[in-house]
Image (tube, rainbow over all chains, first blue to last red):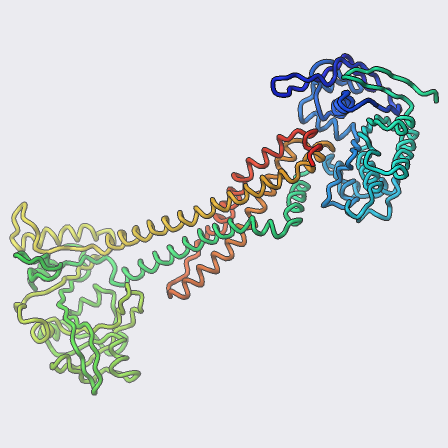
Length: 226
Length: 408
């Protein structure tokens, strides 16, 4: 599904050029559950941003189902994010003004889905993540674990091909973190492709494949025997 | 992405901070209210000036003596260069003239049944009613013969009738003007108080010969007149009639080429035009001052929109991450600014119309809310929202989603 070859990303910091990715090649197949690990500054977040279409590579190729994402315009990238990618962030990134239901509906609004249809789907998704009774609550009325589950429901709303999670358990206690991981496991078993950036070894252990970064390069790529 | 949804996003953000939104709109509220009010008041004043001047009589050329030559310059009308013969010549020789009314004027104390009233008394001919668009409500006007003979009959204005006789019918009553006894034969129809601060009903009309010989000063020769009102048959011929009157009087007075006229003429239409223009200029000036506050209101909206974009950086980043295009973000914020501004415009329109009606009522002139006030106010407030929302919206749309999501 994803084919990256010789990808680089260089940030211009004033006069200085800071390489974040120094030539990365990676392939991810549909249905995989990949953990991307490495110390901060190793380039793993940069890779996630490029994979998610939030950023463009400086050079190299990023193909998604055969399409060259690196050549997309801003609007094409927005379409790509909306149709293909689901994002889960460490800090949840829910809109505080909206209820859980409205937060889940948001990506479907941008997709132009009819109100009745997207409401039904948002309800189904919230029930799926175990928040059927909390749909009218605002983020501040929910616990961290609940907020992250709303965010996961939101990330699934447009039926993405790839779910990208950046430290999804980083702001949660161990117990709720485990619940979220269990949810990821279920989603993956239902066929969703997952890529999780983390530096928590317990989280990485859940994944079936572990890609380690250091100084903008992949230093190891191990598959766990199923 | 449906436009309706973007409108809902924009309105949602406005409703989420009612206090802030209200204060932000306040500038536009005041601006629009001021523009509407100033325009309406200006138009009301213009209508009032128009009705006041046309109340003096339409299609009128007014001929008065010029300054008296000599060491001391006196005001217009103080000379004695006009004669009965001038009026007769105009009536005979100038074409398209509907009425020629020679007059003399004095102020006099009137006394009837022990009640006093000081008023203006005009010595006129029957044509005066035609020239000044006056009608007699009760009784009758004196006729040509009575005027020539200088019969001591008088037609009074409604104010004079009310002051001297109250509700009683004055026709047939005796009245003393200074010491001269007159008989009241008619009462004028009211012209209302539309004059430029003066009561047009506070007047009395008597035959020219009688007023001239018995009431105005000794310095008057037997055939001197003060003002000649010349009414043209229609508005189009007014300028030509004025021209002809000037030429005729120069002939009559044997004024040579290059010599100054010993009389002056005023054309009601040109006076009206001048006054109207003055009021219109004043109105535009007032509206322009008011429009400045509209601009200030716009700056207020821009200020708050910039704050809002900064505050909602993460929201913008998240919207972009879930698939909003830059244009979606741009339109959402522009709509927010336009909605704030137009809400202010609507409220301002209501306040402006209400204020204009109130001022009109207090000042006693007709309220003139122009029919284009509503579309203008809304159009202007929309334009203000667009212009001053453009930069904040552009800033929002240009945000880098990664940076935006990272912002605390």
